[in-house]
Length: 341
Ligand code: SF4
Image (cartoon, rainbow, N blue to C red; front, side, top):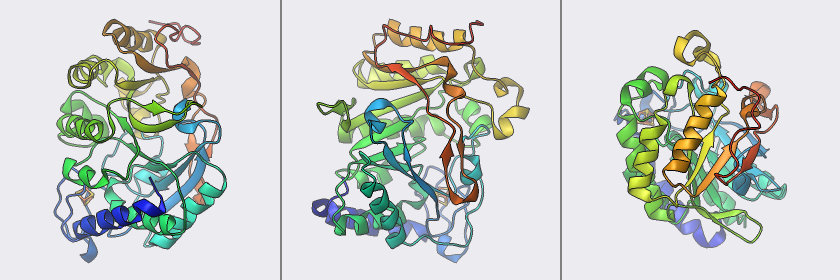
């Protein structure tokens, strides 16, 4: 929570993590580079955060976006390099030599708070966490009171996540692959599966394995694991579901996503150069149902049409928002427009 009474905790975490800029182990690449002296790892980022955009976003799962939206902050760079990244305009370019000061990050949070958002959404921030935390600290000192949603690809270090205990309220965590070779080929990363699974267990340990919602259905605390279905079973959804069931039980909140759309380098990669078929999505839903998962968000098959962020000109625009049917396994994707199997 960003709040005056958590400011000291946020400051402590920022100061503890700042040393990583000199010897960086903020993500599982474990580069050990000195970013203050020009060292740059796969995240392409120097020793500061560069805010690329911030916006009120209505397209996250219903308990996250609610009715007033989530206040998302986006930063340049990312430790992963997904061939199909929707945010490639910001994630896969080196930030300009332009630091966004913590005070300016706080200004963005304040602006979003003033627009009535339900929470602050930190989108893929592991590589710039010390600056982001300082921004949150300044916002807290100015009286902001907002839950924190940590939106992550889960390529995270457990020792870093431990600093976020008591600060992050809701973890919105991808589990992209269940095979390191696929993760390497399509997201240019390494040891993804073990890193992501360990990270998710740490998150569940901090906030519990499922989302807690208030009387309006808005998330107040917990974990939501996102499973993006990729063409040709590249994501290995079945193995990820087995892992989640075995480690966290069937009450874990999951979101099975149909919104994959080949973008950026994916258009030239044969196995991921198309959208998913309805049959592929239904298979993932059926697996979740047969394994007994109880709290599952389901998208319509036209989700890929409805969500394409555009980060040009220093702003982010969303062409629409994905449509979620419900968090009930009893509905499913029959509304989908593509019936091929
Ligand atoms: S955050 Fe960047 S520099 Fe640090 S370990 Fe990860 S890739 Fe390397």
